[in-house]
Length: 70
Image 1: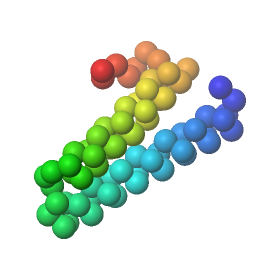
Image 2: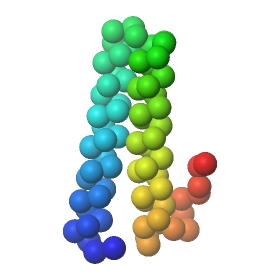
Image 3: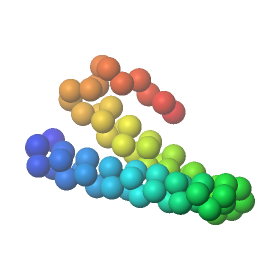
């Protein structure tokens, strides 16, 4: 993968991961840590983390050092 493409995709995935974390942090501060909205927020975070993990695991530099998590 060309360096610019790698950087763009990494940035895109990290923005989503950061947004999912920020949403959960706001919900924790508001004590909204149960119910359908919480489940949706935690699923969003989980999916964002998996996407980031899979992206990094598939990169040439990290193939041998990052174990699969699913």
